[in-house]
Amino acid sequence: MDAQRVLVTGGGGFIGGALVDSLRGDAEVRVLDVDPGTDVPEGVRAIEGDVRDPEVLDEATAGVDVVFHQAALVSVADSVARPLESHSVNATGTLRVLEAARTHDARVVLASSAAVYGDPERVPVPETAALDPASPYGLQKLAADHYARLYHELYDVETVALRYFNVYGPGQTGGDYAGVIDAFLDRARAGDPLTVHGDGEQTRDFVHVDDVVRANRLAAETDAVGRSYNVGTGESVTIAELAERVRAAVGSDSPIVHTDAREGDVRHSEADISRARERLGYAPTVDLAAGLDTLARGE
Image 1: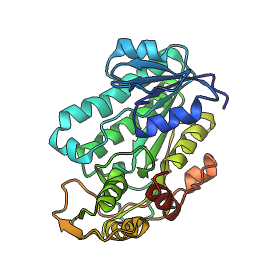
Image 2 (image 1 turned 120 degrees about the vertical axis):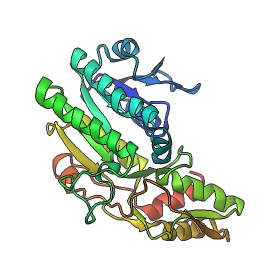
Image 3 (image 1 turned 90 degrees about the vertical axis):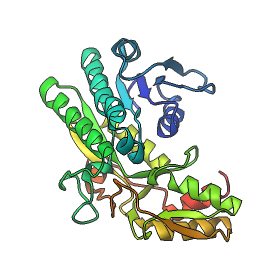
Image 4 (image 1 turned 45 degrees about the vertical axis):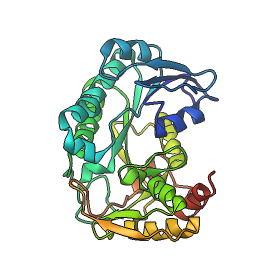
């Protein structure tokens, strides 16, 4: 990796932490997080602060080559319940990051989301599909995505937006469908019921965090800036099937129970990764079966 100094916002979180672990042997790494944690890796500079604070951002961004912007409030349900708070972090916070990058001449690799598509007309969904978010979270990520493109066009800031599909892997905690694998694993190990919202026929494209880290590193090097790229596997699974596969991986007889569908959830989601494959050189390396097996073994 050519970058000598990098900043990872949200570096104390799930994806940000995995990215820090990958980068720290190749670059001087800074982490900006409201809670960097107590186990910051050796050699990594931790800065406690909020991406909405311009003074903290100025300090954190000064002298860096690339900002990997991972800080966000990622819960769709929370964005429905508290849209103003999530907008402040996800949209305004991203604008602050872009402005700091403009000041300090840094590239921004932005964590966007498949939520920008809402319920797509067809799957797999390409980047050229209609952008029609079904939740405040999706709308906030779309605003951030558009700001990244505009900052490239208006101010020559090098930006790359990565539209993550459903990321999973070690270190994640349960929550929305992004965290459903971890939640299912915990409950299956305990013999507790696995809760599926709605009929379970909704589909998701689950991409391993190792592949997401790889996509970020490729985005830091590419010449194809000012664009958005899907980061997924190009394959999907129903949530009902996922529950069955988790039970099998753990060897659990946990019952599967259905509850009401959640407000703001999309029906189907699967990435067309052709653009990322062609322009970034991205290709997923961890399929869902292997990822589930590794997590079931506690690795």
